[in-house]
Image (cartoon, rainbow, N blue to C red; front, side, top):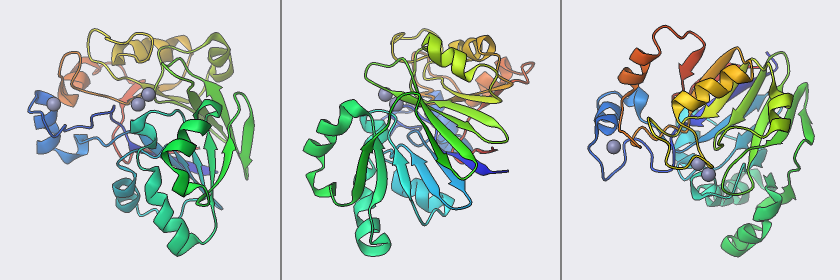
Length: 261
Ligand SMILES: [Zn+2]
Ligand SMILES: [Zn+2]
Ligand SMILES: [Zn+2]
């Protein structure tokens, strides 16, 4: 194993349970904390570095739960609150503990929004922008940012070492170029926001659509993430598992789920 990829959060924007809700999904998550979901993000641990993908509003709790004590780099996939809302919590870590900036890779179109929202974080980060199809290397691990289909400029992350993982947390299908570049990856961790009809077919996918995408990209395993569970029809993990009984190539993500690369 060259690196570990771990899902810190696996829900869509509202989290499961949602504080205002008593649907079947929320009741299942309250009864069985394995199926409680914080907002989506991930961590990549290499021997030398800890790299975060997104800083969800739940980031502080996620870092505590997973015992992550250092952060070296942060890639923001896109400038939606559920993916950047926790970024301010790194200020205290950098100023009190690390004493040097964390490397921050923003979507090029998000630099202005970042500066307007967080002028006080400018010396907390060494700010850069990621570039589509550009690869970053961390020891033997190669990380490439690839285009997703979402309502704003959004990157997916392809990780390659001994194994390969493509992480597309917010996407509606994939652009043709991306499909070519991730064809045959071991694992596709994919947007599976909806259960049943998809309200935002240009921004997100249903879990059924995510499975079809995984098959069309010829992946060994599709992992369903960014699951709202509430819409358009509230469902439970038990129900989805039941529908997936015979499909060994699909897994339902949970917070803390980890993969070797
Ligand atoms: Zn999202
Ligand atoms: Zn609910
Ligand atoms: Zn989004």
